[in-house]
Every structure is written in structure tokens, then in C-alpha cells.
Length: 75
Image (tube, rainbow, N blue to C red; front, side, top):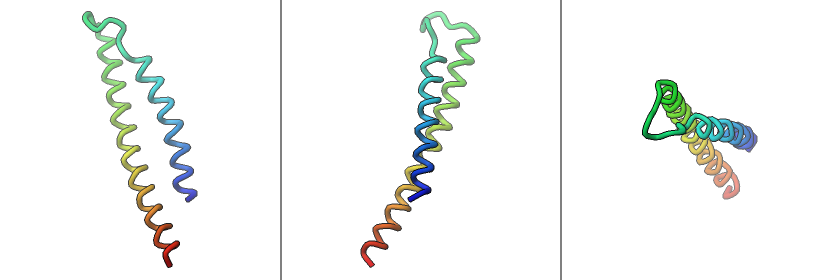
């Protein structure tokens, strides 16, 4: 279970950084976007894609670990 604990701590930190970054990089005026705001939106999109990939890996790891411990409890 240490793998799940370490990955959950990393996920909490990454989610916090990602959430703050996405909120900070969102445009102020949605009708008149500048080049900088467009670049910030693309950066936020890239960050959210990376966090989604980490979330998928985290969920697969949790599933494997829970199945492993479930089989050990049944034996």
C-alpha cells in the first residue's frame, strides 16, 4: 500500500498546483483575447492533459493494488 500512499500524495500536490495554475491562466475577458491569453489557455490545456494522464495511471495502480490485497485476504 505504500505505492498508493506515495502516488496519492503526489496526486494531491499535482492537483493543487494544476488547479491554481488553471485558474490563474484563465482569460479575464472571454470576447477579446490577446496572444498572451491564448498562450496561457494552451498551457492550461497541456497541464490538464498531463494531470489526466497521471490520474489514469493512479487509478490503474490503485485497482491493481486493491485486487492484490483482496486476493491475499481471501487466501
